[in-house]
Length: 399
Image (cartoon, rainbow, N blue to C red):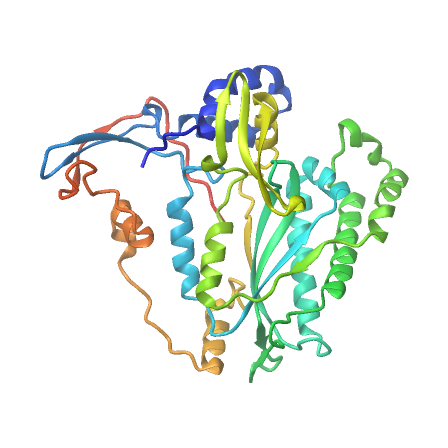
């Protein structure tokens, strides 16, 4: 269904060329591709097809989407399919939501070294959770979890953090029993925070020593080893934010949550309020002011700059799986967990790959792409294909 309000695509179509002209030298290939993909999304440039109702004869043109993971309009089906895949992996246990956040000083380094620093963020967070969970003093079990990278705050500033959804228990070291967490308690946050800080900074220092970090502009002095260590000194002493939220109410609440978080982009179209005279207004939640809803207005140039802060390197996986959910032994370990938890095993669905994407979308989301919008009785049938004026961008991995 088409939106009547402003969209992120409108911002790029109106002001993208001017931004490229002024800041082209600082744009990397990934950012340029994202801008182009969003500008062309669901326009004649990508081609499409003509549909006609088999009852009333109503016709409409549907243009192809860009399928870019940073596009606000192209994540619905990917999100629904991902949720369907995860539903089959849910265990009959409590789940916890753990958030691990990088300090502002590290975020500045991450901006200039995304692949390296975000990779360290994943590995340090994963080792932290697995190490503390495996310690007999805390849980003494192998847990399972997935982590989702978000790099933005409500006002589109750089705020890298991981959302981790973690099983409230795990397999004993010998795989012979399921060990549950204490009710409503996962792992001690202070212990998690300290180990996370130590592991992250240790890996960051190794990356620096190996010449894997680049510094320019205001951070250029950090190329010197002594300056780099001085820069990190306050961060080594400050507490790092690790937040363990109360457990989810049940497996279905887990799905409801991850459906909101996994395939988010920096800002959704429904948050945009107005585009006028080179200024963009959007809604945001001020968590420091009792979660009040406010409206922020930025110059188009600044809005685009902030949006592009969150473009990830090509091929970088922003959803990763660990422990019981690790890809290598996932099937065997989950089967053992179900056995120990007394769960019934459902048969996997077949034949989904052969479905028309429109049918698959309706099955997963409940939203019909084939129902006639006029008579509500007929089905829209493709009667003609429209060739695009440009090659359709290749699909991006949304994980």
